[in-house]
Image (cartoon, rainbow, N blue to C red):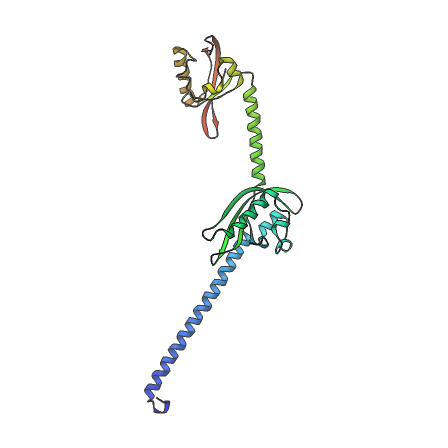
Length: 282
């Protein structure tokens, strides 16, 4: 129907419908703009979070080229992003040969896997720009787009201080182990049930048994003590359970060769790796 044949009311109705469609389109356009703005804000927040996080982050393409590193990784590595982005991670000398081999193997996984994600976690040596080698904990995750391997997301934490602390603890434990093992007095360690856990060489010489013959066994059930001395040892153990040291108390020990030896034993409750044990000295 031509406009000249339409009534005034019909024209008004069509105009109202047209205005409604225009309003709907404007609302859709406004919502799209709002979604787009919110998406940009969300992306900016994510980028800012990644950029300022205290963990080093890098994206490495499946060809091995570095796509991105954040500020923290710049600080850890000593390199600026301008120095490394676009360059092959395998050619910068950042990793030991062992780690390079592992990373290359992980990159090859993209040809074999089509589902799930590939993760790698290692504690490795890492070479800074200044030539200094540090310890880092590295996590690598295979990122896919539309089901196709796209890149590796790398997270890096500097754990050098933790490694140094662990090394100091190991050195300290090793020294204590040597001192314990070669002390001139007989030393032994038992749990609160009287089961032997360890003993030194002087203790082996004192009773004639090898430590392996006694570990895991209770002095209450062994024939090392007389019945009277077993009662005395049990009372000492009760005090140890209450956190009290005992002794020196005199005991007669039955040696492996059936001979006897008189000793004075002092016991001390000690904490080892959070566990209360008894240190005995004879």
